[in-house]
Length: 108
Image 1 (spheres, rainbow, N blue to C red):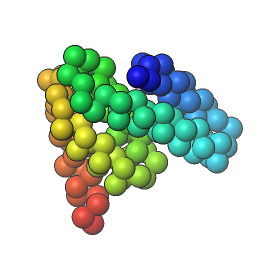
Image 2: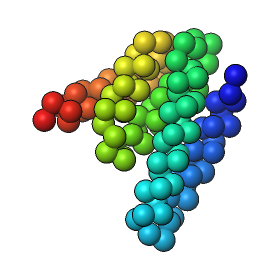
Image 3: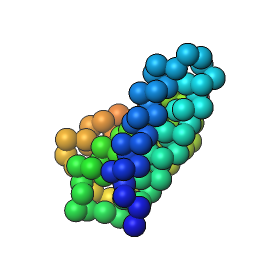
């Protein structure tokens, strides 16, 4: 199994670099890389119950990156995947909020 926490940390480092990038193009490329890593970590945790806080955090970050990149269908799919497993109660409202916003965005 892939070390999901390492993927998450690598993704967050890329987000930090993107936030400090010298150009929009560089920032965009870094965010895409971060999204792919975070999405990979989320998919690895799809069925996991034991790591509910980590799972929920990674899904929130992956959904957020998808939205930030305008990849709304990917973000919506990730929110549905998050829902297919246990969501830690601290993250339930955030996931539901993303689901509602994504539903409205995609329908528009």
